[in-house]
Image (cartoon, rainbow, N blue to C red; front, side, top):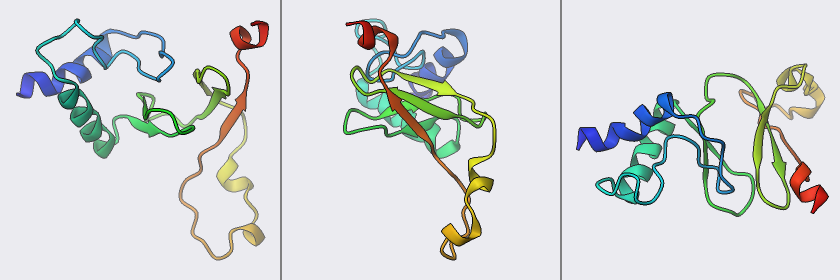
Length: 126
């Protein structure tokens, strides 16, 4: 079982496929690529990796959950409103520091998520 559970993690470090429309990249085997690993094992492993802070679970809309292996580098997301493509972006500034005290309403703010939405070049030209 340990071999099955670490296969997605090993794949993450050796293969860097572009994200598919459902947000999968590298760590998830394609159908038929690793038939001995069940989908449940893959998603259970992803859940463990999220809890360990190794990957981020990204919710951009009501589509399937997406997983971001770029968990250790601060960044935001740019999402195509048509096809769902996600790109990591690194704009300047600090959005956490940019929230004025008057807009924090007594909250101790510890994290911020910014998602930019628009149309990717493929959807714009279609």
